[in-house]
Image (cartoon, rainbow, N blue to C red; front, side, top):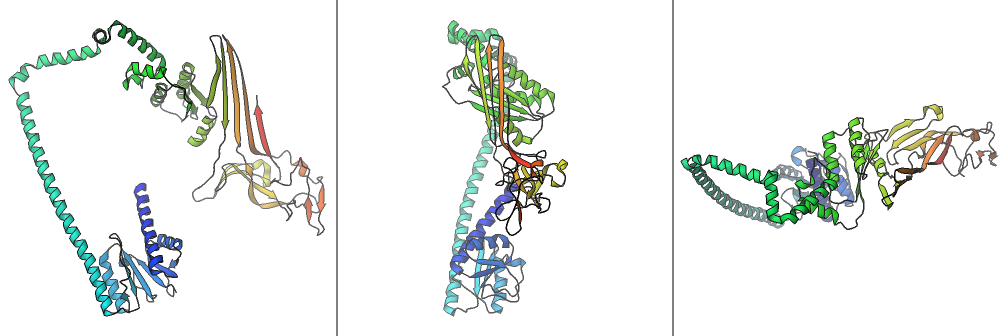
Length: 527
């Protein structure tokens, strides 16, 4: 339904654009007034074509009146010098033409109605000569005659096509009846009924020949010999190790030998990371998902499952599969941030490599780096939405907001008042900075980028591992550092008596937005 609505709106926009282009090029009015439906679309199209357009009102001084769907409109009392009628039905033109003729308007045949889907006619107050009127109406009649001839020709061709199709259908039905009759004679014969036990035995024998292990072995020996049977057994063992999925089995789609050969003869390729956000996923669907990935012939991949749900079986199943296949990774999230947020979490764990691997030694090294660039485009009827509110700050509290046109996580608060030079204005008696009454964007609570490194060294049964994590670039609001903005901060007054403040650099940088607390760019790391 929504798709059909969008298609219809697109067609209307295209039709209005073409009409506006014709009006600008052929009628060339300085201004136009619109009456009827589609006024908004046609007004916009006329503005783009360079014609001033507005809704029709009594007393309008527009040079051209455009009437859309005249059947639903009433002829205004006052009219401009030219009137353009636009309608999907040509039958409504006659009534309006009669009314316009009574008021001294004549058809301008210089304007041609182009297109069968939408008819248009231009009327003006200047009376043409009798010869021009006769010639114009005859040209319109010629157009109608040509359309009628084409329509009759098309109808004749369609009628011939329908007759051929009916003949083919009749022959097909006759042939179907003959086949049904022959089949009935065969199945109803005594010979068919007497041979039913034999046909049943043959059918079951074919099934046994294709399924019973002894017969399968005989068939394989016949086709490939003893060496072929050994090769097939080896391929099946390798298949069981390479493709452990039981639900979505790979051998349903290709022979075992081909799957093993493709998995073993792969050129060096990039690692493909598959990020899957989970939320109380049904276990049967989850098992099919895991099998469909594990049973790929391309081997250089990793599956990153990010679980924000509460169902315990989901995490247990993924962790069991991850214990067998190290390419499957699992992470449990503390908070559900829906599919976009959970997917971003999953991207943080997508790179891993094994630089060294021997019988006794193995070194695993993993890196992650994430950067999220976003912008709030729409919030319904509102322009902002409060995500978090620092109520403990009191009247000078800050809020983490979703603001249209800004990044998600914008910190909104009351900034200091400043003079024309950008200095912070303070109270001349107390020396305390003056705070604005309006909320403004002070920073953003999202990290500019996050990263980390994981390393694990294994020697036989001994493991030594370390994790390094870093987050850079988020703005943090701290109320504990409000003390440096107290009255003991150094003050400065201008010649005109305007109070300003030049704070200490480590307390309040003058070239950045700060609040009644301190807003600092944060760097967080952990090892």
